[in-house]
Length: 174
View 1: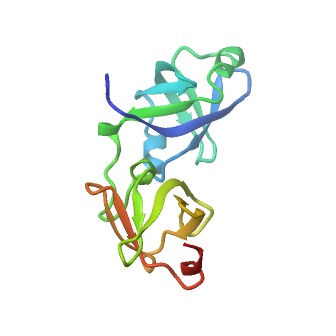
View 2: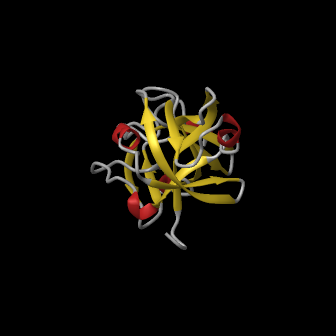
């Protein structure tokens, strides 16, 4: 784990009850990661502080899950973890289907239109509902591009670029 990129997979958003249960919101679309957490170790991180933690138990169906960490058996002890993330080394990320990417892999990629002109870089990925939206920081300001197959024509992580075909209405903004 040392010197390996740590990827946040869940956020601790609160406590429940008096026995140290933490409310955990997934940052991943893999529900199995959370239902099978008991006995597994994660890195808890917040504002540069890190701690290795072990999950004692998890319950619930998500949003939030309720989790107990080994050695955290009171509300007071649990409150110290609120606002932090649970992270895993990049090598422990679950494999994605072909053509799917983790958000951290997309942030920073250059975005090129169908003519090869640079539109800017992906600053963040929004998840408002049925499809993701790429927030592009470009020379003419911010552009929001829907992450749809009809728009995103290719993603090349090695070349660090995304090729898009802009829909009508967006071409005049770039």
